[in-house]
Image (cartoon, rainbow, N blue to C red):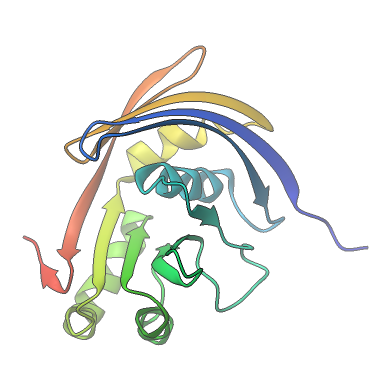
Length: 185
């Protein structure tokens, strides 16, 4: 018998000071059986980072060719395609062909450096692509907050996300490797 996804609920109160976006949402997140709590929480952080009226979760690891998180435009087309991890070039080129903005949020420092160094030239050719990353230490902090039912207050300012639940208040920095096809060093 195949294992089903674990359904998690997150109530998020968002204050994005940089964008002037303030909202409260109840989100349903399906965690695939092979997905770690850290990756699921990073998808939630990606959603928070780009939160808007038309920001949604993709169908997850079980569905190839779909973003982890995406934002649609008024016509219903994908405007922003967000991948979590270290995706291959083919996936990112396909995403750039289907959207106006592509964002990668990489994790696992042991994988990020070789992935970035071996693909930096090809990645910089995708002018719609931005590459961001999270440290293992910050990923561990958000993974520790994973639960079936979660309630967070999230404040975003200057590339930093402050996440608070009933017992913790943590600071997460999402660093930038490349912004819209231009490497940032």
